[in-house]
Length: 126
Image (cartoon, rainbow, N blue to C red; front, side):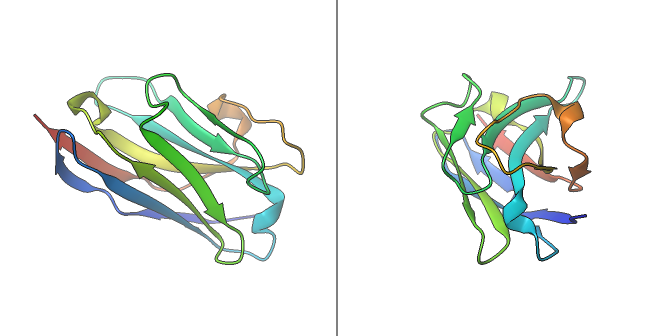
């Protein structure tokens, strides 16, 4: 089992950058594929980015490709989301999620992730 805590959210102007962090507990963090999801008010939760257990593969939603970068540091039990060229439509609560996986397979389906953090608010002003 793994517990996740996000940080780094805040208010930023359009065109700005933010770096989100997700700290994981447990000694088996490297066994988990990690993802970021977001949910805006009145909208369904949507996939943002995913990274394999060893960082060997990543996948992004089209809406964030070339603007966001997901990375991880298994020595620090952490996953990151570097967000740049932020837009007002990126405003949402961002949550990290984990699923036990030792393969490069990545999924965008939230129901395949059993472990979730509480989320961190990102607000982009125009």
